[in-house]
Image (tube, rainbow, N blue to C red; front, side, top):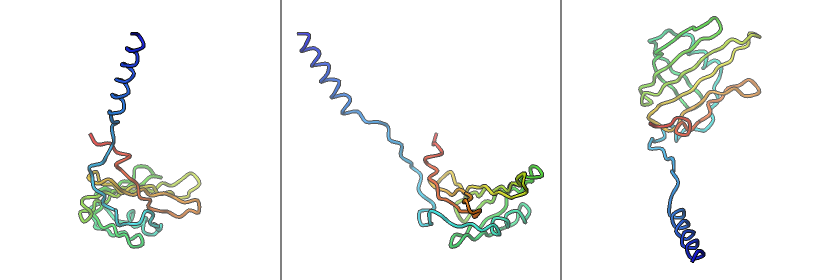
Length: 148
């Protein structure tokens, strides 16, 4: 009788666990940059353009075949060695390009930035290569930013 009870409990447990499904995280947001390359070279001269205009100025940044048109909404020199700019692009469904220029202790300049839109599941991150050049790398923001 004990053996039959154990077999019944085991069978019931197996049926419950085999029919249950784990939560699957799926994004409901579409991809904005699905037709854009995964890596886009970004020249320092184009990145520097963002730091030469005041807030309220319309700006066009060209990274190979990818154009980012927008208005500088914020241009702040936070410290002597840190300058941050935010560019708002209505043509890309209100996407934001946040970029910062930092002067390092050895007087070299480093750029960091992201192109993001909370309504879409992808974006770009500005990264520096070992050779000193910069790339915009496509990222899946739906894996980084959780929906509430």
